[in-house]
Amino acid sequence: MLTEVADAVRLQEGPPGVRSVLRALRRLAPASTKDLSRATGLPVPIVAALGNELRRRGLVTTERPSRLTEAGQDVVAQLGMDLSLDATCRTCDGRELVIPEVLDEAVRRLRALMESGPAADMAIDQSHCTAETKVRRVLALLTAGALPGGSLLLIGDDDLVSLAVAVVGDVLGGPIVEKVTVVDISPEILDYIQKVSAGLGTRVETVRHDLRQPLPAALHDQHDVAMTDPPYTPEGARLFLSRAVEGLRPGPAHSIFFSFGGKSPDEMLEVQREIMALGLVTNGYIRNFNEYEGSGILGGVGFFQHLLTTSSTASAPAQGEYGGPLYTGDKRTRQRAYACVACGEIVPVGTGARWTSVAALREDGCPRCGKGPFRPGRLLPAEQPTAATETPAPAPTPVKAPATPTPRTTGWHPPTPEARAALAQRAYPYVTRQADERDLPAIGAFEAEIARVSFGEDAIDDPARWSARLGRAMEKSKEGMIVAHGPDGEPVGWCWVSVNQNAMTGDRYANFRSLAVSPLDNRGDVAELLLTAGLEFCLTKGITEVVGRVHVGNVPMRTVYRKFGFDPTSLSMKLFLPGTESGGTR
Image (cartoon, rainbow, N blue to C red; front, side, top):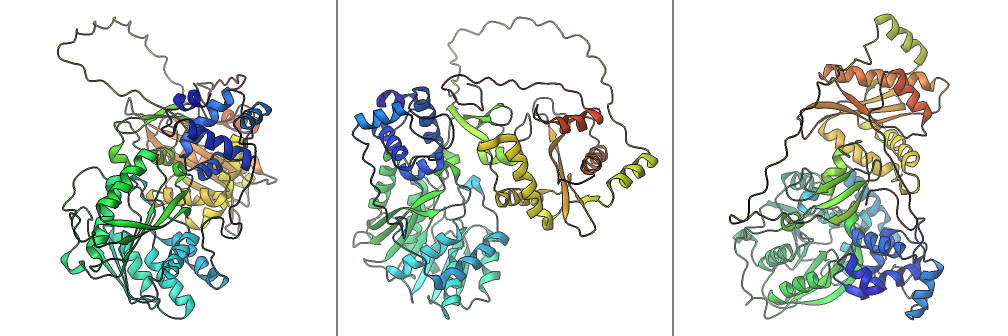
């Protein structure tokens, strides 16, 4: 059974990987997919796929979070894994370091700096670590004796560790390092570091540089310790570590602190080979040390490794100019199918697809319903090129031309001035305006409630996450984002209309992505006011087709749509089978 499950999901770890998931379920139940990913070191999509296979065999419950069924408990007992002992330190949670109370202020300040700092670019494997992780990294430098004093080289710093070092020093009453040098390609990151560090008393120098090129000569052999969190590929590890080696002073026992995400044993073997090839040796290793915001595929965690230079480091071949694949997206050659939880639409993601990453798909929303979230499915078969000697494919059978389509009828017209005034009177004292950043906390709460109503237990219902997501969307454009508010300016309703383009026909259309109103005495009137403002926005953009999605049980919203002339054009059908998971087509 273990072999069958491993083969079904093409698990590189084989039967031992399935055993690790069963063992974690036995110990942690009830456990979410993310909890199991963190416990086993397997990526979230792999854990989800394993969970589905185990459910099909009746070993894991269908409800979430997951538990072993009685049959699953029997299997665990037969495998000799029914003994549940957890020796993980409850104080540090296995991270070996605890943030002292004196640095709680540093955590709070760094959290605020993250909120106003540059956004992560997932296309180049960025995923910001938490404020707590930043402080733990500084504590690791102090614990290892790399600080205080000396000079620190940061090879890439989208995690803003330079600011963490400066903030910790400020909280403790003085700089804990002589100099910090940050090498990064992003002017946005470097400008932000310079702006914030200027008032913190720590000497921070920034160098804009493409790390595909060797370090500038002025940075060679100048630093006592280095730190890097590179792209999560063997090539990325070697390149960033080699640049760290270039910047360190000659000689053994200089430290490099290296963060990386969990990979399969074969992939990690490649990474360890790159470390050895540079003449570096592992001095310490902590699993799940780093926590990241938004790195869902890795369970939001990564390991932290303390490396030391040796006498062989100086003789290791230097990494010259690099022009090969570097990021995980560069190496991905096959597309994966993702299912929209909201409507079941199957969307290919990867090289050659409309969306090259699931992050980009989440940002845009489902092409069918505009929502999400998305569940990973199977890898799609690679396209095979047609050989010149193959027999030509038969000519396609002619298809009868469709009949002339029935002319569309317009279902809504802008209200007359009198009707608009009457609506405003009914909605009084609430009026509408374009949303902006001050509204994000309220909008986040609206979206969290929409998610709970739509997706139940699978909902992402953290208002802060929704606020952050909508904040990133606002950075691109606030058009079509509308709030209703009272005299105090506090939003009581929210409407979001986005202008999309049909990938096949090129036609532009509008998508009602969100509509929510607080429980008010005139709630229906405020909803009508928001929807009217959204449709008026569509007219200003020259849009002639508007689509919206509503759950079949949401009678009030269906009534509002009907009142505005929306006609049902499609129907989502869902069927639940014994032992299968809902939420997507198979």
